[in-house]
Image 1: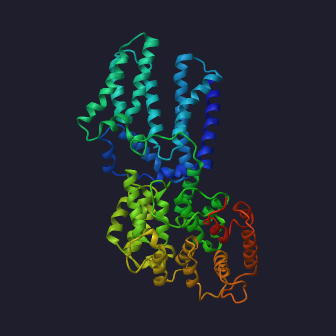
Image 2 (image 1 turned 135 degrees about the vertical axis):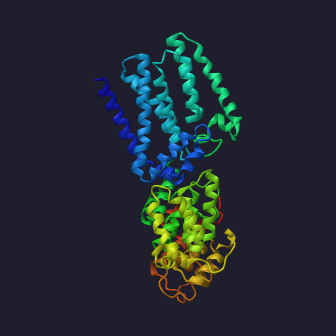
Image 3 (image 1 turned 180 degrees about the vertical axis):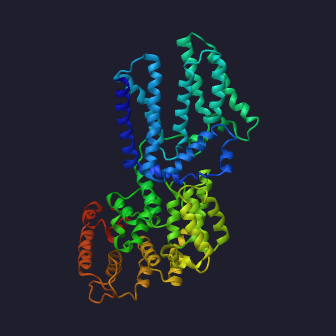
Length: 526
């Protein structure tokens, strides 16, 4: 009956955990896979055998590769947390005997702390794995009595090598258990011995003392620690990142329709998705855009996922910039990233650096999920003509600038205009128009639309009508094909503005228009 209660209680916890990671936090699960790269090679294994906690990091990366499939990743997360709970129950039974409902809830606490740590996207799977191994070691040593101190010391040494700094919890627990249950104080010596282990390892391993004491293998950012908090805005950006990776533009737009993300990289991804659907200049102001940086800008460390910026650059044909961001991701993460490596292959292939692309493909061929993709890309390397016939990569190749340029945020309009004039690409043209709209550069917008007599997107019509109304009292001789509804709404907006109606009053009826966006830049009277 006792085991049945444990099974039922742990099953409920597993289901709740799985539902959370699969439906509520899938972006964080996916981020685990794309931020590491596990290779099935001997050399890859050997580099993790040379320092404490390397084995835990290696196995954690092995598990992380399966987060490519969100449901598998959610299962791995849940199983690790489940393991912590069940093993904690076994330790508590050692002290109190039969588990009451209260003690079962107490047993949840270690797993809950670990769950909160895993909410941080940069917490590695080696952390919960190390905790599980540490508790297993505690349980294995509970019944050791003969040569106990020798066994405990050997276990501590092995545990420190496998999981690193978390092994101090093993030393602390067995010291407490020996004091209260065995009336023995010898195990206390394990604590000062543990403090000496990193210093001894420092004599033979070329790592800093701080890393040997803290084991950076648990967290992706060296010297930092998990945030222990829910961040659904970050999750929204990471979910968009996963959808962008698989070119699910419609689902990205659907997320933004519910709530426009705050992260700059995610906002750029939303506008790129709109452009991919041919709706960028039609629906630009439906998504609470702030300024031209929402369209494209140099990445910074405040962005949740730098690869989103690389996605935007790549889809615009700015291959050198997309490649540079991918390189930066490799450097910032401190380890190889599968997504960044895939991008480097794509950039080299589109640029024609086939020998370099081949080298990157050799590396990716040793991964689990990218073997098929590497074989497909090798065909393009061996027969470049297949690149031009490929619907996606052929389009990107067509957008590639004929003359190299130095990227500068302040000259983005000139860069886009240069690409448009060389390639006559509609998506890049829409980006140029959107940039002029967000820059409020009506003069340049008027120039590129002066020969455009066909029906134009709504946002463009609103901007041109606004420009026309600055110098003309009526629409009698207007040069463009503007819908009557747009004209009537423009007049209504102007009347309300002249009467002094504030932005809050205008937002309800005109919040998704160029006129309201432009009004945001005008100082308001108090």
